[in-house]
Amino acid sequence: MLGYHHKNDSDSELKSFMRAIFKGTALSLFVTALVLMLFSLIIVLLSPSDGVIMAMSLAVLSVFSYLSAYISTQIYRSRGLLQGIICGLLPIIPATVISCAVNGYLSDYMLIKGAASVIMGAAGGVVGVNTKKTKPR
Image (tube, rainbow, N blue to C red):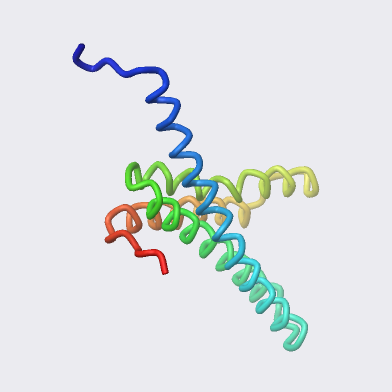
């Protein structure tokens, strides 16, 4: 029958999709942790201004979102934009909830971080799905 899909096929497809996002996020967390350690060392040694620290925070979040989406789309080679947006939303949703709980409001800076995270995730997803699959080493 044309257009008919078994429920198991769609369940399997969703599992593969979510597994790719999970793997991309996990690997990206590792890289991001290393970058955060480097930035922490810079902060301790140089005592930069709050503006520099905020920029560093935005950069780390953007790199995380891009990498997680890129890696995810290297695993599951479809729906790059959707994967990217999901990967961009994953870190920003809990950060927004915590920020609102602590501050009592949603700051402009948090909106900027959210937009940057989603945009960088979308970019990573699109680039990843349109790039030749990386060979495992």
